[in-house]
Length: 515
Image 1 (spheres, rainbow, N blue to C red):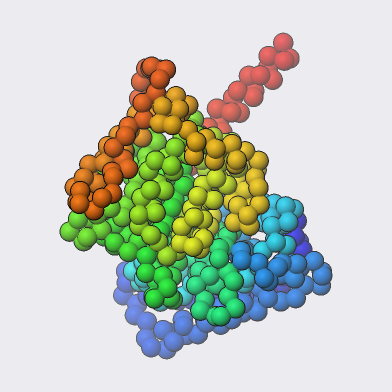
Image 2: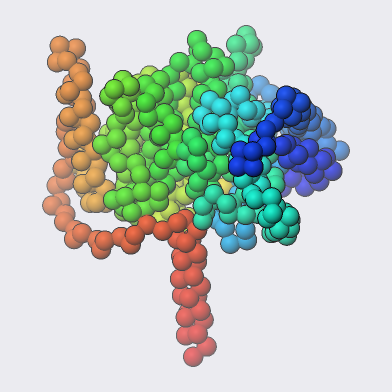
């Protein structure tokens, strides 16, 4: 564990208290903020930002401080702030503070921190958040008692003081008095990496970065927190990239490999032709949370964004490296190369990793390294990885390390075999090696893209349709349709149900041993 994690900082509580003393307009109670209140709000945010920077950069008594051991000349930057752990989670909730602590510890142990340039985190301010979220949404997150009836306020305060969290957005999405701070840190930290990479300084050597952040963000709609997400951090950072460096960063690609579809990110950018959103996720025909993200959703023709939205919805659980590699080779990479982005964001949920309690998939660390390397071919290698989901502490740690090693150009076990399969296999070999259910889905997606290509490309341009060759195997495999999936449940319910079944199996096995 790093020195920064071990050492307690007495200023943490002061910063949290200062930041969460923000007061916001409560329209339900007809309370209006005057100019003094607005100025005070701005002052508090600015002061909190400055305090945070000074705290993050403060020297440690231990010479092995993470800021000191890093390589300032590294082309890869890292950002992490333990204050994001102040977003307190219920004991039985999968989105635990330890997620980022375990990843950071793994980075320290693997030498990732020493090999990268660690930069300070920062807070997202209202102006930056307003590019994706309306003011009311920002106010709701800032004030944990927003809209509470005055007669119930004291009771609510006592409840929150005792429990440290509340479920006021939906059955999955909790928050507490420090959640606003953590969510602003998450968005601000990704923007900090963005600024480091897009900086116009002559000596700037930064090419890529990894933001170890929480809470996740890709389910958060423009005006609705959901699916553990309070602000859509990657969406905010993507908008910031275009604002921060308008000449250098005109087109942004967001690749979301979280096992759940990023409904919030898709909806925020669906009408925008300058942002290409790609999601590769488990769908189960719309039965898997959040029940969105279908292959025919290509963008808005009226807004000229048709072709800047790509969904690769998997039909079932149990898929792994080979299925993902074929999807990248046949669909994702050809379309992304055609888009020619200036910057790539990866919404890196690791809940498709083997062992995740929610995802049910089998992607290995080598698979994640392969996908990272493929995306580094785009945008001159300017790639920013931001943590989204992933709830098995071991799985997310080894997967995150694999991605960070890929950014550094280091090898990862299994990566070469996946690359060889992806690049050297024929369409027949692809079809013979992957799950038949995934094969049917990929052929359906290829047909959708082939039809779209024919509609939007003139034969005179000389470019061949890259999607008009379906994957046909030589083995004639057939498989009966699986039973219809149960109606989708909330993430929390699915997690608790899975854990209950595992406990029952363990109890049964223990009982057999006794007899």
